[in-house]
Amino acid sequence: MNQPTEIGRPFINKGVVGVSAASVAYLLLSYTLVGFKSDQLVLVGLVNGLYYASSQSRKFIIGFSIFVVYWIVFDYMKAFPNYQYNSVHIESLYALEKRLFGIGYGQSILTPNEYWLMHKTTFLNILTGLFYLTWVPIPLSFATYLFFKDRPAFFPFALTFVLVNLLGFVLYYVYPAAPPWYIQAHGFAFEPHTPGNTGGLAAFDQYVGVPVFASIYAKSSNVFAAMPSLHSSYPVIVLYHGIKKRMGSINWFFGLIMVGIWFSAVYTSHHYVLDVLAGITCALTGIALFRQLQKMSWLQSFIRKMVALTA
Image (cartoon, rainbow, N blue to C red; front, side):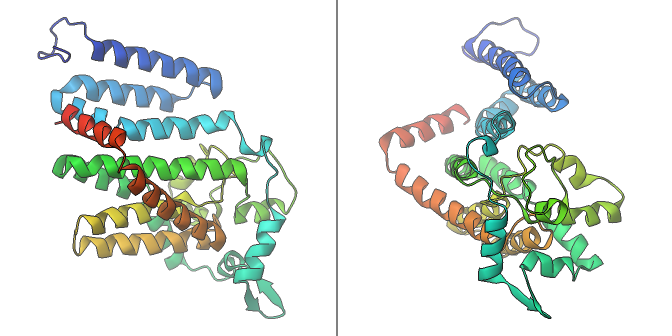
């Protein structure tokens, strides 16, 4: 057999060798590319723990390995900053945003970010922070639901999610772009080693008294990756698959989260309206592309094999 049937029983099989080898290779490659981080040990511990805990948890981590691969690719982007390959768009993107979506304010024209920066409220600071906290939990929770309730629907969702991210990553390198908070803090000068910044989400951290977003953005892979806003892409993917599953009233909740994240991205100065629109376009493009790919026999075969492997 390829899988152990008793905990504690000595065994050697392809799965054990594969997971062990992959874990060691991941740690070595991570150390080489981005240096040692405690997060790497947490990920290895989580993957190995779920793989060995039980047959059900093993199936779960095999299925969610798609998301693990996405996270590793995202993390490794730190080793290859996009500003080394193309010029970063700072002032030109700001000017285009103002030209297309500028808001008249007295004798000035403001970008939507600048407008909201002058009209912040405690209510919106908290609300947008709560919306932004959902950008990972909602897709992962939905994926978990599909994994246990509809395995054949889980893999198309997971693969679409990764495909949209890969499209976004390509755009990060084709069109490096600074977020609005960067201009607010540094002007139009290019400073390549700028660390991640919480932007308007700092107000949420101050209110709750915990550096929630400060800890998240301290691990940012690249601050010049504002276009497209993948934060804005994720809820589109979830809503599409929710509608496809005919999930009824829960889709209204997904829709609310989607619009809330879009607004929050602009309100907190993490993205321009243009970034949000690019994120939406990226999601719709990825969904359409996957629908075409899904017609191909090799992908159908892969999904069937993954469903069988995790059944």
